[in-house]
Image (cartoon, rainbow, N blue to C red; front, side, top):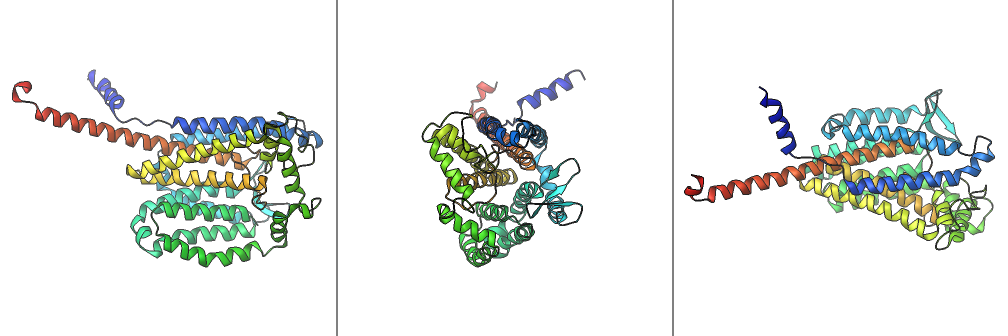
Length: 408
């Protein structure tokens, strides 16, 4: 009896081990660190001008980053099979919260948009949670209906219908940027799940007129598009944000004017600590700072996609698809945010993940990355199990090939 616990412990030590991917951790910590420094730099003038304390937005950012870290740690400790089991209830709950923003007393209207839930002490933006929920739901669907997705048009259409329902609720809020992001991630995950390209191209051709109509249905969206094409035509009105961002990036040149020395953040550049924080990075740290940030995102996203591919190869399909989805979501949002700051995409109102100041966006991004790290953990564990199986089989074959005298 005394040997039983130790023998069980020995088996656990000798069994397959998971590990949190060090490359992902490095990229995440680096981006979070840059984000803290730049939020502090970009928000001081804004907070001081509102007489709420120079470091108000920094303290707020650190608070939500701490809460997000707690969510990430919890996500890193939960087996993905448990998350997969509740993918459908989570989707129903997510849809309910998306509709709750339209209820009087629960939903909040800010700057003409109904995107927030009133939680009393703070507000919460349901779309940030629905991004992660949609990834989990799609990963579960691709596992359960793998053959249908690969061979049948109907198998490809089903998840797009769910995404379409979410997009409708987002357009009513309105939130065109998040709508486009969810559609892009959904299509990307379905394609990586094995859907035939002709089905995806056919549906894209059918949906393009609808998306174009949605983009042109509101005057402010049309103005944003016209401003994007020529921001200098009206630099003091509709083109003000973009022209100030371009001025900031131009001032930074190669190495920047110095950390904390930005002029544009001093009431010239709107949303300097949120949507346009990359422009402040460009002004203070120059092209070097922008390239560094984009390189870290490329490292994070590329590593996540590699882990997803490895997971599918090892038979860890749910973990692999989750890694695909989180990587696509983070990567596409970073591309859109950077494109807006650099003037190559129309203004969308999307923050730069892990860098921009925020509340619910910061928390849910951390939770999303916690799920990605958990997926990497389980994929590494499956790889370790396969290597152990190969070694054991090789040892068994070698032992069987020994002459009888050696066995004796």
